[in-house]
Length: 415
Length: 186
Image (cartoon, rainbow over all chains, first blue to last red; front, side, top):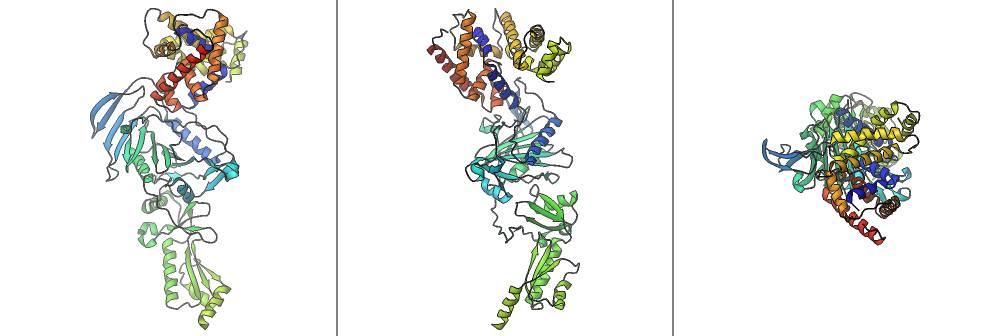
C-alpha cells in the first residue's frame, strides 16, 4: 500500500469519529464549555469575558514560524526560532517590588482557551463556601488585589461533592471576575486545587520562558491586542488569570498579591454566625474616616463594606487605604461613620470605667448594624437618657435591657 | 443557516446553495485543503471544486452532516491535486510529513486495488480506533484525516509537540501491528 493510498483509505473513517475530532479541534480553540449547573453568576462571567475578548478582537492562529526576541533593558540580546507559534519573549526586571522578580512576558497570537468540561455537575452536590472557607480549602488566598476601578462581580464560591455534597470532591474549580464600570478593563481568575485549571496552555514548555514572582514560577503571555494571560501553581492551588485592558504592571501586581502567605484569620462568630472585621479608625486618614462606616463578613461569607456615600470615588479611596481591592463583595451605605461609632464607644467605656453609668454592663460596636448595642440593667428612662446623651448625632445607640444583667449586677453588689 | 436549510437549497437547485455553503464552510474547506496542499491559492480552487461537486451530487445525495460531507469532498479533491502536483517532486509541505509518517505503517509497494479490499481495510482502521482512547483517536484523525499540523494539534489538545508526536508514533506502531495481526499485507 502506498502512503497516499493509505491516507485516501483513511477518508472512509466512521463519520462520527470525524465529527468528534473536528469538534474537539474547533471547540478547544474558542468555545468555553462551563458546567451549566454552576451558578448563573459564573455563567454570566464566562459570557462577559468572552464578549470582552471578542470585542477586542482575536486573531486566528497562524502556522507561520516567528522569531522570539528577548529583550533585557530594552536591548535585544538574542533571537531564536520556536515551533510554529507566534511568540515574542520579553525579559526585564520588574519595578513592582524590591524582590528579585524576573518578568518574562511572551507574545502570543491568542489567549490559550479553557479546556471544555462537558460533564454533569449536580446542583445538589454543590457545597457553598465563604471567602475564608474557600481560601482554607485551597490553602491560599484566591482573592487578588485588583486595580481600584475594578469591582468584583457577585459570585458564589464552592465545590462539588458527590452524594449530595457529603462524598468526595469531584469539581472544585472556582472563578471570579472583576471589571470596571464600562467593561473596558476586566480580569477573570479561575482556580483549581492541585493543578492549573484547564491545564491546556503549552506556551511555557521551558522553565526559562516563565517569570519568577515572589520566588514562584509564573507563565505570563499577552496578545498584540493587550490581553494578558497567566498561569501558575502556588501552594496547593493552580491559577489561571486572563485580563483585558490592564497595564502589564497592574497585571503583575495582581499576580503578586496572590503569591503571598495567606494569613489565616481567626475571626470568631457570634451566636448569629456574624463575623466581624476589625478596622482601627484611628489609623484611617481624615478622608477615609469621614466616609468609612465599617466592614464585616456575613454568615454567607460575603464581605460588605459600608460607606456614608457609595460612590466610585469613595470606593477607590477605601480600597487604596484599606487594601481592599477586589476583596469587597458588596458596597453599601450607612449613617454613622466607623470613626464616630468607635469614638462613641470610647466615651461609653470611659463612663463605665468612671462608674458614671453603673447600670451599663456591656457596650460594643456592631459594624453589621452600624450601631452600638449597650446592655443595661435598668429601665429607668433618666438613666438611659444619660447613655443616649453621649450620642451627639442620635440614633447610633441601641439599648438592650437584660434581666440576667440586672440579676448579675445585683449579685455583684451583694457580694 | 442550518445544514438542512442549505441541503434544501441544493435540492431546490437554488443558486444560494453554494454561497450559503461558502459562507458557512468556506474557511473549514480551505483549512482542510491547505493542510494537504500547503498553498492557499490551490486550496481555494479545491474548495470551489468541492462546492461544484456538492452541486453535482446533491441531489441525488442528501447528506445528513454537510460539514463532513463537504470535508470529504475537499479532502479527496485536494489529495488528487496533491498527487498530480507532486508526481515528480517532493512538495516539502507539512502534508508530506503526514504521508511520511503514514509510510511507517505501509510498505509502499503493494497496492490495494479492489473496492472491497479498500472498504475492509478502512473498516479495520475504524475498529482499531475503537480500541484507543477518545483523545488519542481525535488526535490521530486530526493528523491523518484533517492533516492538521502537529503544533496546531498540540495547542488544541493541551499537549506539547513532543507529546503529540509520541502519541501519533505509538498509534502508528499499534495500528501497523493491529492490521498485520488481522492478515492485512501492507
